[in-house]
Length: 64
Image 1 (tube, rainbow, N blue to C red):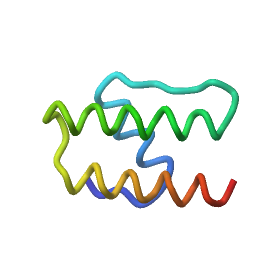
Image 2: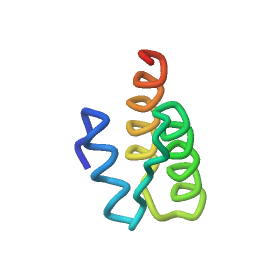
Image 3: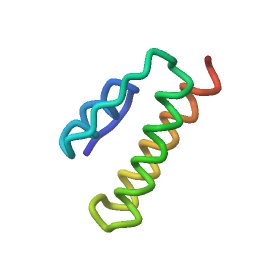
Image 4: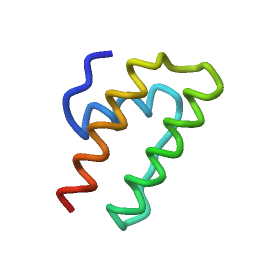
């Protein structure tokens, strides 16, 4: 998948039935990263998608 933004990562996770919203953006980002790691570790997403999504989320976390 061609992910370029935080919104794209949200849409990517929705494909797996993952909806994360706690009201705290930092917690949301950390939970999204954990979910992506779990999906990758279980072989459900490709390494390229995992790495791209993690980079996008780390950039978002850094900007918060």
